[in-house]
Image (cartoon, rainbow, N blue to C red; front, side, top):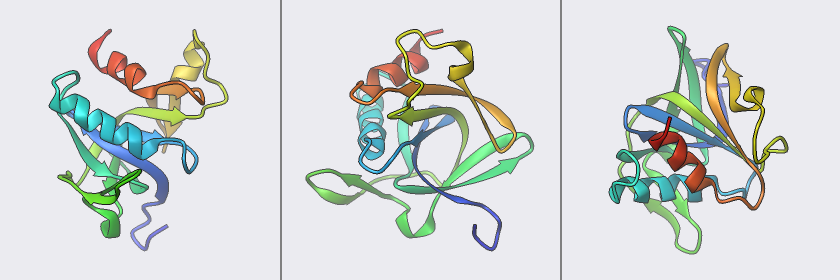
Length: 148
């Protein structure tokens, strides 16, 4: 926790349209890769415009029944691209979380039960996509963003 009380969590986050996507998972699970894939998908008009919020570690806070994600100051505007290293890119200072993606999720199934598709963060219920190890996460997130 910081002096301001906002916890730093091991995650990445992007802003897709008007809502942030929080990407969680163990080290090496593909958080940075999914974040960058979503940025590229936004540039290709496959999903709404996507901009980095933070990579590797982000800060969460609750505001008026919403969960807001911000980059950790030391890492703002930086993303790891495996094979290239740390790269600089455009970023936004914060976003309201509208989706949580859990990579390498033990409860991921082909047809998930409704309870698996929701998570509570800081007392706020949010949509969730559990992604099994070895599954391609980009099509799942793109489907969430472009279908009902």
